[in-house]
Every structure is written in structure tokens, then in C-alpha cells.
Length: 233
Ligand SMILES: Cc1cc2nc3c(=O)[nH]c(=O)nc-3n(C[C@H](O)[C@H](O)[C@H](O)COP(=O)(O)O)c2cc1C
Image 1 (tube, rainbow, N blue to C red):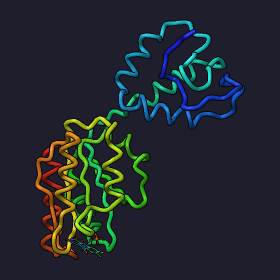
Image 2 (image 1 turned 30 degrees about the vertical axis):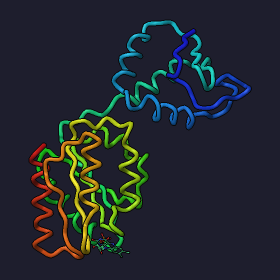
Image 3 (image 1 turned 60 degrees about the vertical axis):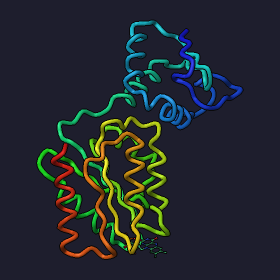
Image 4 (image 1 turned 90 degrees about the horizontal axis):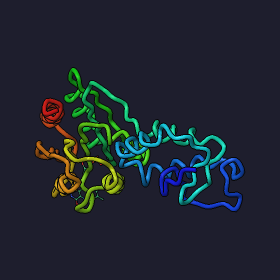
């Protein structure tokens, strides 16, 4: 019997106690992994390496169903979740929110400029992307470029939602950058940069702002901005 404390646990209890009696608990099982163990994937793999030669009949975590039907199924699930895909290419993720399409135009041009050989670029509209869906992608990305317009002296909520979801994600050493369209004061870009720095991103490139609808020249600056960030990787 393995007593692994928090690992292989779920955040609930059920009077029926055993995994083969409680019904489908795959969601709770995964939520517990993502929230507690997910940020420590390499430690997870080291720990599983220590138990790999044991004969295990039952896993008794400190909470959640007791795993007796097929204990290795649960261990292997953790191996799968903790093994990040290896990629030769560098990857840049661009996240933005945009009410009137101005910051979106910037995002698209930055993506075009950053799309050079050996660099994969993906663009996400944060009004259609829940932070929880992309945290794993962020963990394996090399750079994050985040765009927000300024509304009432602030960055917009979908952008703050993303930035506040990263506290348990391994980010140190990744490149971060900010951009956005504004009307007169343009605070959002600086606020995003401050947050990126406090999350331990490197922010090598000063944030890029354009006023209202970007001009052809500003769009060219966006492409150059994207290209410089790609180059820095
Ligand atoms: C309700 C509202 C509040 C705004 N507040 C600010 C502001 O505080 N500072 C600023 O520089 N621009 C402000 N703007 C202007 C927007 O930042 C500007 O229109 C920007 O181009 C919008 O970008 P988007 O198309 O990506 O949404 C405001 C616009 C609106 C509609």
C-alpha cells in the first residue's frame, strides 16, 4: 500500500471511498493535479521514478478516492501530465483583448513579424480563451507577448485574468513583452510590463503603443517589434 499524501489525490471525499465505487472522478482528479502538482512537473517525475519498481496494490492518498482498481493507471496519468512535449522550435504566444479591433490589428502584425524560421507563433483572443486552457502552453513557451487597450486608465479584465492566473506557473527566464492601442494616456502597456517583471519574465523590449487605429507606419513598427522578440530567442 502506497501512502503518497497529496499526490494522486482528489479534492473531495465520498462515503463509498474506493475508486471503483465512487463513479467518474476524473475531473476532480485532474483539477487536483493541475492546481497542486502541476507547477512541479519535474519533481513529480523524480518522485514517480522512486516508486516505479514497487509492487503497488492500493494507493491511499490523504484525500480523494482510494485507488485500488488499477493503481498504475493513475500513476501513468501523472507521468503523462508531467511530461512536457519537447520541441526544437522556439515558441511565442501572443494574447490580446480588443474592443474595437485596434489592439487586434497590432497583435496580427506582431505575429507576422515574429514568424521567422525556427519560431512558432500563435495568437489568442483572450475574450475567447479561458486562462486555464492555456496555462500548460504558457509553461512550455519561450515568450509571451500580451496586448491590451487602455480603458479608464487600466488594462482590460481578460488581460488581468490571464496575468493573475500565472502565479503557480514556471515562468522565470521567459521573455515577456506588452503592446496596445490607446487614446490619450495609455497606461495598460506599462502595467502589463510591471506585472511581467514581477512574475520574473525578462522584458528586453520596451512596450509598443499606438494611438487609436494604428497607421501603416505603426503597423510596420509592430512587425519590427515581433521580429526583434523572435530574434532575441
Ligand atoms: C470607455 C472608454 C474608456 C477609455 N479610456 C481610455 C483611457 O483611460 N486612456 C486612454 O489612453 N485611452 C482610453 N480609451 C481609448 C481606447 O484605449 C482606444 O479607443 C483604443 O484604440 C481601443 O483599442 P481596441 O480597439 O483594441 O479596443 C478609452 C476608450 C473608451 C471607449
